Amino acid sequence: MEKSFQIENLAVEIYKEPKDMGAAAADYVTGKLQAAISEKGAANLILATGASQFSFLEALQKKKIDWKKITVFHLDEYKGLSETHPASFRKYLKERILNSVVPKKIYFLNGDVEDLESELRSYEEALKFHPIDIACIGIGENGHIAFNDPAVADFKDPKLVKLVELDEACRNQQLGEGWFPSFDDVPKEALTLTITAILSCKAISCVVPDERKAQAVYNTLYGEISTTCPASILRTHKETVLFLDKASASKVK
Image 1 (tube, rainbow, N blue to C red):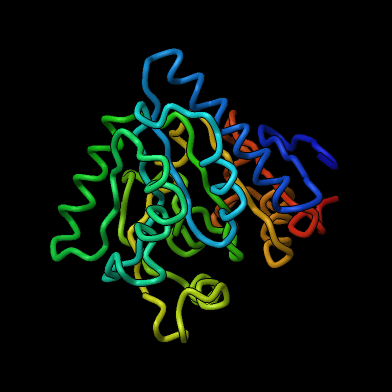
Image 2 (tube, rainbow, N blue to C red):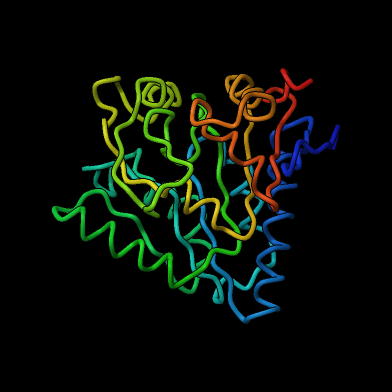
């Protein structure tokens, strides 16, 4: 670790390379999962997707964790995208970790169904039945957490899951990461866990590498706590660690 500090409730750890950052986050998450299993015989976990999570997920699946005692949820999924699409988050999670570790139960958020209202209701009920021990999230270039872009983010959202419209910055990020061939191919809507759902988790691991996230990191740490930068709300959560690499931390004071 190159540096660690705290801003309000938010602990921040900076590492030289993404690999080191991902390994540290995996250590933290493993500890939380093992503590939950030790305390109550089971653990509930939320996983994120995207390029930012590569090093973390690679490290996590190498840990000695009793996955047969873990129930897994994920943060979001595009509306209308089949699981076979290269950008599907269900596909991503299966290929990058879940097929290897085989958890006790996986609740996949499916945006490719006719009755989206029913899908949202059933996912919310599952979340209520499985209080989350640790959520693994990232921060978008526009400061979003999950798909809570500034225009749709609500710090007091009455819902745990909802359908949202994605803003241009968010859709450009998905294009820039190579998930879609053109901007027009990026879906305009997605299903997402709300900020209320994320903040209700006992602990949060937020993994944010890459220089393109540096401004969002700066706004998260030093800006006003507001939906202009939804991730700024993490400063109010009592058990959150923000894991950065040298590039994403380049604007840190």
